[in-house]
Image 1: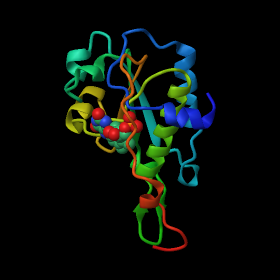
Image 2 (image 1 turned 60 degrees about the horizontal axis):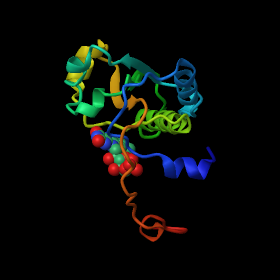
Image 3 (image 1 turned 90 degrees about the vertical axis):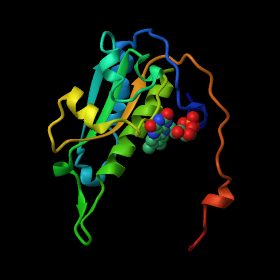
Length: 170
Ligand SMILES: Cc1cc2nc3c(=O)[nH]c(=O)nc-3n(C[C@H](O)[C@H](O)[C@H](O)COP(=O)(O)O)c2cc1C
């Protein structure tokens, strides 16, 4: 898909068909995530691929929406803080920025494959830790279902450029 068309076409998919995701598509989506730039090229993340079949009730403890477990796959992007770049001057961590870029690559690549996704941050981190067996030092940051959409996009509401862009200074 042409890039401008792709970014307009992506939307938060909150309804999925149970159809399987082809293995080659999944690999291309994961590769797109792994080619993402990260601060100092640290790549401080792990992606967890989760099959939903037969585990829906348990997985819904992570995010209690029926559509969360409708797709055949869920992906979880985790940060590995010990591997992330920290700006030495003020100790600012860039882990969340890195994961956001990785996830955006993943989501746009999925859109390009005709697959639906939805960024999910409002999940129960305690349940995610328990169900995915995460070590204490690993941070689960974003989930998305991955599957074929079974819903229509809503209208895109965005602030106009004039409200969001300043030139030369604040
Ligand atoms: C960091 C982030 C976290 C989000 N968390 C959730 C969430 O927990 N649940 C949900 O339904 N949507 C979530 N969304 C989706 C946003 O609500 C959605 O992207 C926004 O309303 C714009 O709609 P669109 O994605 O259809 O263009 C999240 C989006 C982002 C970028």
